[in-house]
Image (spheres, rainbow, N blue to C red):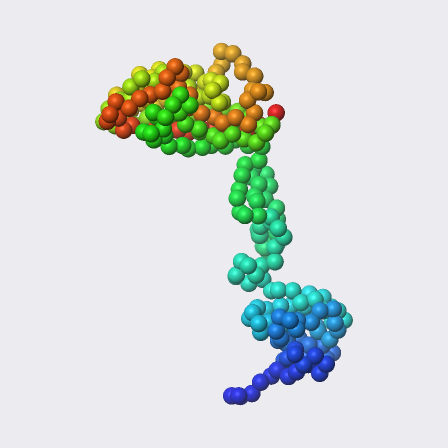
Length: 251
């Protein structure tokens, strides 16, 4: 009926407006402002729905009829979902959303940043610009230095060099290195960034002699140029794409 209302003030707490009661007289639907949401009092049926007139959000009594606890009902608004710090929601075996902690191959911060767990195979794709090529003997970092006590175990890498306009001059043998310690085979300047055509270079870890990596923890993986940097003859514009497969290990 137009102009009518089902809500009436609660007899002892009139700031709570009551709409319905069950057969036992317990409240099943009500509304009030944020400051007036009841807690640990009797008279509210388990499952009672409360409308927050301050925010417009819904609450339900997850306590008992003798001691109410009004919890926010999950909505489609992320900020309104009650979720433990660092957890995500995933469908469980009963097809119901449940909070879980990401684990296995990756871990996650509460800012939503995923990272690989130690010991997992990882890949990186890095662009090497014309400026990078002439930047020095430590040309480009491919994998950033890991944390203290951890080292990069290289599985393999490739460089796809795209020639443009002119070849770079100077330079020396190209390899991959932890810091400046070479850990792969080498390729000559003439067959890499000094080549006057495209080149695809496959790097694998050195097999002729073992390398003690205990002193190379917290060290980045770089493109290394022996003897001297490549130089710009004036019009060289070649670039490269580097693909790296590696594992972060703990010493």
